[in-house]
Image (cartoon, rainbow, N blue to C red; front, side):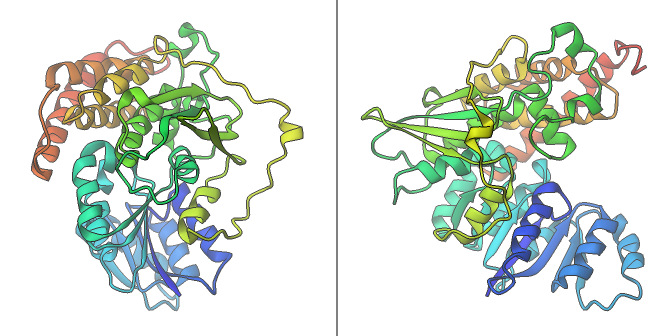
Length: 400
C-alpha cells in the first residue's frame, strides 16, 4: 500500500488526485491532507478519507475546521502553520507527495519532500521557477523521484528517452514544444482585453482550474513559467523550448529528436491523466478519463503566440534567459499583480505593466542559497504592491 500526502488537497489538482486515488483503494492510502485555509472543504475530505494528519497552513482557520469536524468520527490529528506542511511531507509512512500548493507558499514543503527522498509529484511550478537549482540539487542528493504533473511537462516526460536523468540533457533530443490553449482572450481585440473582468479571465475554454492559474493562462504567463520549469526539469536551454498555441488542448507537448522524429502525447484535457501517470509510474492505471475521440476533434491547429498582445509571455522568456534571481522576481511580481487583478484593484493589461516595472528595477543576481531566493521574492513583492497602488487610480470605470 502506497502512502500519499496531498498538499493543496482542496484545490482542483488536489481534488483530481483524490479522485484517482479513490479508484484504486487497494493500491493507495491517503496519509495526510494539507490546505491553506479552506476549512469546510478540508473537513469534507477528512471525513471521507480519514487521514492520519490534516493541516491548515493558515492557523486562523483551525477553529472553523474543528467546528466542521465536531461530532464526526475521525481520528485525524490536526496541525496548523506552514511548517506543518513540511512535517507531513517528511512523514516516514508517506511514499508519494503531491505538491499542489499554489504559488510561492508551496516552496518549503516541496523542498522538504525532495530532501526526504519521496516520489515528488510536482504540480507547484513556482518551486522550480523560484528555486530550480536548489530543488534539483535536493532531488539528486536525496535520490528523490521527481515526476511533473503539469500536463505539458508530464507529456514531455512521457515522450522523453528512457533512462534519462532528471535535470540533465537527454541524448538525441533537439528541442521540445510546449503547447498553450491561448486562454479565453486569444482572439479578443486589445480594446476588449483591456476591459476584461476577473470572471472573464477565469472562464477557461478547456480546463477547470483555480483562479490564479486561470489568470496566468489568460495572460500566457503560465506558459512562460512552464518554459522556465521545462529548462530545469529536462536540462534544456531556453532556445530549445518552443511555445505553440494549440486551441484544442489535445496535444499536450512534443519532443523533436535529431533524426527528425517528433513524439507527441495526446489526451483529453483532464488533469487526472498526468496525475494517474505519476502516481503509478512506470505502470499505467485507470484514471476515469474519457477516451480521446480524434474523429470528433476533427483537426489539430497550431500557431505562434502573440507576445505583443500577451506581453507576460515575452517578459517570462526574457527572465528565463539569464536565469538566476530574475525568475524569482518575475514570479513574485506576477503573483501580486494577479491577486490585485482578481481583487479588482488592477486592470488586466496592468498585470504585465507591474511585472515589467518590478523586473526592470530588480533584474540580475545569482542564487546561492534559499535566503537569496526569499529575499528577492520579498523585495519584488514589496515593489509590486507599490506599483499596483500607483496604477489603481487608472482603473476602468467598472472597477473603480
